[in-house]
Image (cartoon, rainbow, N blue to C red; front, side, top):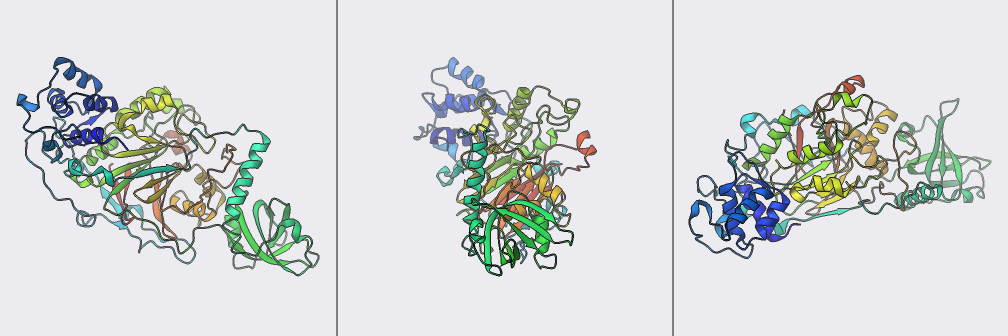
Length: 571
């Protein structure tokens, strides 16, 4: 969290419709009279400016040792301990001087009739763990120009977030866990792969051992034919027999054992959901010769059906977005501006967190002939442009970002956060940058952020009734069921072997947030809210060639106190 004085300066600027570079805030905070310096900078900044830069601040500080307050009048009040006069903390409009004392609304009273939400009650999991989701079009509030107009022509906030200046930031909390950044140890040697797969097996098998009376595979060889037995193992191979049954090889630390699922078993359709390298448990009966296990039951690590998510103690919201793709010719700059303008309005006053799940930029060389679809061809210039767009977000919103497969980090997962050079370029807001995946805990609510490359493999491997691009949340349900964000190794997925498997879902999250597939989808699986947040890039020629019709310019907003969802559209 930022220090108290810079935080208050950011809030004071936000109420006047300005963002500020981090260095600019630091310069104001370090002035002899920060409150006076802030007022002088606001008075001196050009009318068309939306962001206070270090140059604006230096120009004021260098021209006077004791900057006057706005209008040249002496200060009426002395600064408090934050360095900002108390009057600045009371929602006074910078242009009119009128006090903005609009009461803070609760989540339900400010939603209009054409908005709909996903509630915990309406989306709870059925017996199979699947849900019946409303279509995206039924849950969209259009972000038209009139509804989202946020700033006046002179750069001030037209209806700017009235309570921001009065908020007590001590209520905020944000912690990041399971971040690979700075902890990568893998060298690609064989032993590294052994280590990561052993770690995966031990952690996921621990979630299954209490459910079956398992035996190591080498112990099964000593058991007599016809005995009841159970195995916890990693799927080594799956194949069908000539009779239409399924033969599954399970591997543990002792060896490999074959298991036969008969096609008439009630759970036989779950074999369609199995992927190599995931961990499951089976129980059944050994054949007469003891050489094979006839499976009677199959278990996944899964999220418990009794799972109860945590919620925040106050009404606060988070906006979840991904796949911005700055640098592409199809980046939707106008829609992005409508979104960030809306964030400055009173209607968005409760949004205090913005979570971005990867692909900030379009990247270079990601797919064939991509250079023909680039608006910015230099990767660093793409990030510089993204940083400018990021500055449009209100300065008092906490931002968390993880990388995606288009970003300038390694492709192998887990992906570390951006390097120092890119962090410096994207220094606006002092955003929190973490690896992919990461678990972000906001005021007690855990959000598993994962870009989502493995969703491609889930959708490709599974039957259409179980996973499609049109319903990406269903593919996400399978990752929750397997308690791993990228279960299968050896396909399109690239795995970086580390000392631990950062892709295991140790604790069930309250919210699971992904992107990558450029489709909007959301719902609840065993009370875990799953959201794939669409994208900010119109259909490219490459997407047309692979039949991808993106869902663009959506911003899912989650009430952290109820986990209700409102879908906003800005195009």
